[in-house]
Image 1: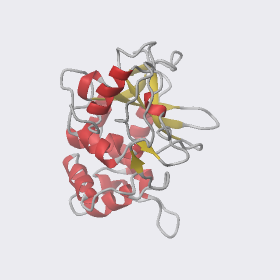
Image 2 (image 1 turned 90 degrees about the vertical axis):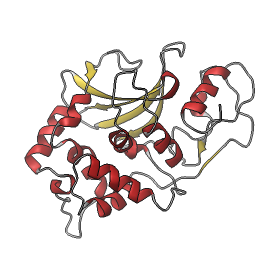
Image 3 (image 1 turned 60 degrees about the vertical axis):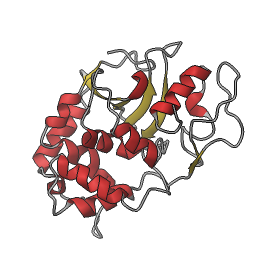
Image 4 (image 1 turned 45 degrees about the horizontal axis):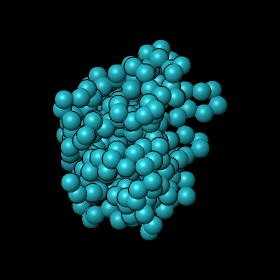
Length: 253
């Protein structure tokens, strides 16, 4: 698997990792913070144990055949999640790609590391993408798993009142105990990565590669977000921008 900008990384499809009993604890537990004594929450909150969680971490951060998680959605677009392991700073990266974008490129949504970059998705985009899998493309198709995979990229001060309930249901569907899911969902929604942001359409017409105005891509007011301003649509054409806006659920057909 080749991804622009990751030419030296041995990337392989990693969706099978979701079946690992410790996957969700490894992937999401760190977002739940610590207790008053600085202790991490237990892996049992996600239906696993510490040994399973550490085994999942080892698989997720493997130097050889590093796994990539793919979330395909409308119009041939895919959100890709992968890890970068460096001695000084490890990272999880979220970016968006499409096979027809020229030159072959991707656009970042969020980076989780010591140098955070995000948020990368609004609540409306997150839930729309989660519930519109492209089942003809390889990747993760279960809506609950898709929502949780993309959840770390979320930052939205206008998330609806039932957002925690939606997340709790997703947790239960992937194996978290029903007794723990509601409070874990609240912690995940209020994660410490970045402040909740406001999303809106550009005040001025968004210019694409064809220099034609189009305002269908939401922008984020978070100062460290790759979605600040019109970054998401840079380098793609007017038609490609329209298709992306429709795929993200922010623009009508």
